[in-house]
Length: 266
Image 1 (tube, rainbow, N blue to C red):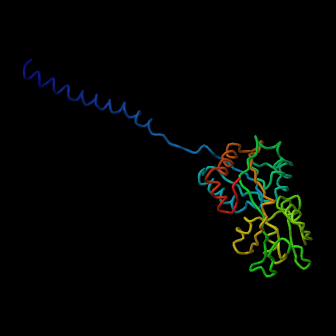
Image 2 (tube, one colour):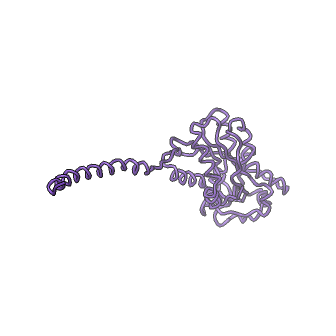
C-alpha cells in the first residue's frame, strides 16, 4: 500500500472509531441509571387512633414521631377518653385503626373486633393529686376518708376507677367522693380548678400536669397496677398503618417515649 493510500485509510477509520466509542458510551448509560434506586415509604393514608385519656401526652408525642418516620401517613387527632367509653364506641361500629386501653378488661370487651391479639405495652400506678403546695396536708390514702375533704374519683367502670377502688378496699378505706368522672383527665381538671381537694389519678397524670397539681405518693400503689394493651382493629380502614403504629409503640423508640412520660415497662 502506498503512503497516500495509508493516509486515506487512517482518515476514514478515525471517524468510525469515534462513532463506535460514542455508541459504546450510550449503551452503557441505561445500566448506570438502573443501578440508582429511589426509596419511598409505602405507608400512606389516614390513621385513626382511640386511646385512654391517661395516654394523651405520650401518644401525642408518639404520633408526631411516627409521622416523621412515615410522612405520607396523616395521624388524625387522637380520640382520647375513658377506656370503657372508647370500647363502647368501638362496639357500636366507630371506625378506628388502633385501640390502646388503660386496662385489660376493656380490651377484652372488643376482643372479637381486634386483629389477632392485643399486646401490653406499658404499665401505670396511682398517686394522689392535690392542689399545689398541698394546702389540705393530705399525706396518705387514709386522709382521703376525712369528712371535710372533697375527693373526686374515676367512675368504677373506668380503669383508674377500678384501680382506685381496689386500692382503697385493700387498705380498708371508705371514701365518699363528691363526684365520679368518666376519665382520669376530668379528675385532674377538677383538682386543678379547685373543685376538689384531692383525687386519685395515675403517676403519669401528675407528671403531665407540670406543676398544676402536686402528687402524694402511695407506698403500696403496686397493689393496683394497670396494664395497658394495644391492638390493631380487624376492620381498620388503614390496616397497614395500624400494624406499623402498634409495632412502633412496642419498639425500643416507642418504649423510650413512654418511659419519658412516667409509664412503667410492660
